[in-house]
Each structure stands twice: as structure tokens, then as C-alpha cells.
Image (cartoon, rainbow, N blue to C red; front, side):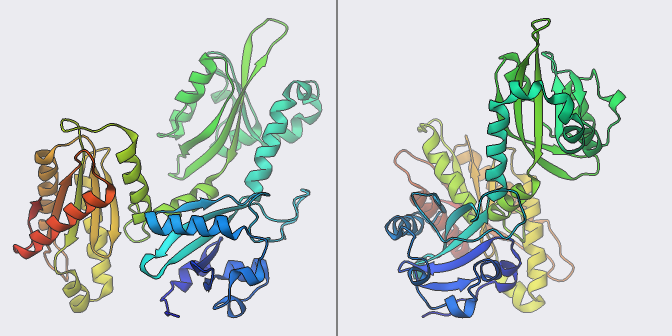
Amino acid sequence: MVTIPYPNVLLDALEIGVMVIDESFEIRYWNQWLEINTAHPASEMIGKNLHDFYPQIDYKVFARKIRTTLRLASPTFYDASLQNRFIEIPRTKITTSLLINMQLQVTISPYIVEEGLVMVSIYDISDLHELKLTLQSQMEKISELNCELHRDKMIIDANLLITKIDEECRIVEATQAFLEFFGYKKESVIGEYLSQVFGDVSVDFDTIQICDAIARQQKWSGEVKAVLANGEEVWFDTVVTPLNDDENGTLSYTVIFHDISDKKRIELLSITDPLTKLFNRHKFNEVFENMIRRRHWDENHTFGLIIADVDHFKRVNDTYGHQSGDKVLIEVAHVFSQTIRTGDILARWGGEEFVCLLPDVDMEKALYVAEKLRLAVEELHFADAGTITSSFGVSIFTPGDTQESMIHRADSSLYRAKENGRNRVECI
């Protein structure tokens, strides 16, 4: 069995379960979260077969998911349901729920494709599952709850983030919990438009979908983002429910916000390169595949791919150390982010390589963007490493192209740039 240099410190620090297995379900890695929650130590699991400990898993489905992940080099999801059972992990959290075992979300990601290894990430979504059940129950019984509102008002007011708005999106009521969360006083909120109120503290809060639902007199649910006055980014699971006023025949709307920031941070971690904060390779592959499939491209309407490589990066690491190398990658990622257009998709491909998708460009425009990136790197200066350069390979989508064929042409162009002296842009 090949010894794999697992990032134990990082994976053991995650508040999720992580295991690495091969196509025959042999366990190669078992992180600390799994040790604690399954009561199976890593020393007992590594080198053994998952089937020996959890025979209830549908291994035919599981094997098919693993093969798909390795073939596409892209994450897939295993439906951990009653029909497709996965490992059973008891809930130790104190709760009034009757849920004995955790509700799991399972992601299968390619780890070392050539070795047939995948990383299985296990998220405890029990709280989210209970929340959805609670919200469904509330929506079904909302008319019954109206007559009991006075009795429950103090509890709701103190604990739930709720606003009541009219048909013009003006705030009519707001709970104390809502006011305290956003730092408002009641008199500064009542009568204001929802967009104006959130605009004071949240540049990015998007109320358009909420107001559109109100204009259509429809229910709406979804995720919205806010940036608080202190710069903190928060995410909400939001439900908008219309309410009939029988006395005057008008409609009002209850908007319930539930903070899901922790869940979104976990999602962001799974798609982000930890060093450069760009998209990681798996997320880029997902976006790339969707871009190829989502519309009909032709010779007059196409998109480009750039692969960039920092020249002589190994020399920087060997001469000045890995900390200096990391600083180079971080600064190159930053200058790339500042140079590309809005709508371009930038990611770290691995090591010192970066990739960028350019929607709606021809070869001439793609080469122009790559040249701008090359010049931007050339202007950088580092205290120890001095100046650096980078080489670029460019390809353009043509009918019949796949993700693999575009990457192959761009990679071949990058190789040509290296062969022709580096610090240049090439295309095929």
C-alpha cells in the first residue's frame, strides 16, 4: 500500500468527517472527527475494508459514485438516505428531536486519481434537516398560528429574526431579535423600505428576489447574503410567506431569516484554495463543465482558457524557502484577480499553475488578456525573490471541444512558451 502524505493537521481540525478510500473500499485515512463520532480509532480503521465495519452501505451505488468521481476528476454526491444507507453516526447533541442518528451529506472528491483514491467528506446536516422540517410545519400551520400569536409573541420576539412587510416592501413590524442582530432601533426601521434598511449596513444584501415574490403575491424561499457594518459576512435561509388581512382585504408578508453562516463557510472551504483564496481545482472543473454545457457556442460566440505557470518557481522555493514561495503565489493570485475582467473565472490549478476561463472572447481577445496578466506579473517585485516572470498557454473553444481537449491545447501552448524562453504567451 502506497504511503500518502496526508495533511493530518488540516483534516483533523475540520468539523466534518473525512476518510480516504480506494475503489475496493480499503481505508487509507480516517480523521479525528470520525474517530470521536464513530468510536473507531484510526489505528483500527486504516488498512481495513469499510465493508467490514459498515455492511449496510449500498456498495454497488457507492462504487458507481467512486468510479464517476475518478473518471470525471470532479466531486459527486452520495445520497445518504433511507434507500441508500451510509455509516450510522449517533447524535450526541442534546436536543428534543427524535432523530437518533445524524443526517449526513456525503461528498466524494477525487484525491489521487492515478492511485484510484477518493476523499469522502461527511457533513452533519441534522440541524438543517430539522430546520427545514420546522419551516415546512410553520408554513402549513401559519393560519392556525395567527390566533395564537399573542401568547407566543414574547418567545418569537426574543429568538427569531422576523420582519413583517407590506405590498410595497415597507417594514411594518420587526422582532427584537431582528433589531438586535442588525443593531437597529425600532423607530429607525418601521415604515422604511426593506432595501433601504438593509442598504445601511449591507452593501451586498439582495432584496430583489423577495420584492419580486411580493409583487407576484407568492411564497418564496432561498438564501440571501448580508455584510454587516463591521464587515462580517452573514448568510440567511429566508422564507417569505403572504398573509391575508381579512378585515381590509390587503396582503402583508412575513419574512423569516435563519442564520446559516457556518454552513456557508464549510461550503466555501470545500471550493477554495486555502493559500490563494481562489477557487480550487475541483470547483474550477465544475464551472468549466457547466460552461461547456450551458449554451450552444459557435465560431462567432465562444470562450477562452488560459493556463499560467510561474517561471522557475522551484528555484524560488529552493533558494528562499517555501514561505517566500507562498508569498509569490499569493501576490500572483492577487494581481491576476485585479487584472481579469468581471465574470472571468480564476482558480489555482495546483502548485504554481493558475487557470482562467474567459467567457465571450475570441483568440485575439484571449491573447490580449493573457498578455496583460504576463505584464502584471513582470511588474511585481519581492524583497527576497526580486522580480519573477510567468508563461501562458491559451486555447479557444471550438465546436466539439471537451474540457479535456481544451486543457490539452492550452497545456501544449504553455509547454511551447516554456520551450521558447519563458515569460511569453503562446497558443495553438
